[in-house]
Length: 350
Image (cartoon, rainbow, N blue to C red; front, side, top):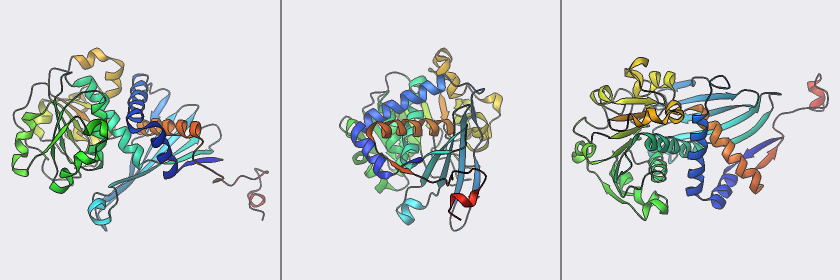
């Protein structure tokens, strides 16, 4: 049997656990897995897929990872930046499947649209906790769509900031950001919407900056370089496509750039303009070696977050544990298996 976590199951989990505890659990689970990461037992293959321009810019790709002797996780994700405005759909839609490495059986199938947003925010929270100063007061956010909500929520679980400076190419989206934040965040922060003409000054006014935009490949950086606090930390989340960059070259050149997955970041992250020897330690290394992270805390740092397939495995496992505890989800016989492994027609009654 395959357990399917449909939307009803995920809503039941959130209703029982709450978004604050669920985010805390995601941060803790990811941190533990990063700290214990061993490439000999956990293997992630660089994601690949189909990118296209018609009927509009988009891609569908798959992100596989394997825990040796246990399971394989494959997330299939679609990125279509025109979805919110043209179709009232999220720009990111995803599902994750889990397979038994002993038999090949499909163990579980779960929606990952929500889980992707949750784990992406959690990864930024871990990077922020490792690299940003303790006394964060102001967080900047460029791009105020779905990912902005979980970025701010996750960072609020590791830093007690009180002010958000928010910019979006669509001012009406930025205007609704505060009401979309969980109450645990919204009740203690102010959100000041930054006008387009004031965007350049945002960099110098924040302690942490998150860029989560749908800028097209080849377009200009979403913020200009300029003066900023010496220990500014940036979570660069939107660069997830070859040629798609959010930050100016000059800022990247003088920053300590921390990749989530080195090979992936060099192809489609902010790091695609760098060489491997120009990168700082990756996120898993910093989790395992906190003194290495501490040495970076007094300088400009950039977390190059392209999305690690291991994060999707962890997110699916967390959701499945809660589903089992609550008795939610649908058991389905998706793989046709008869009583004679040598006779496929017998399985279908032929």
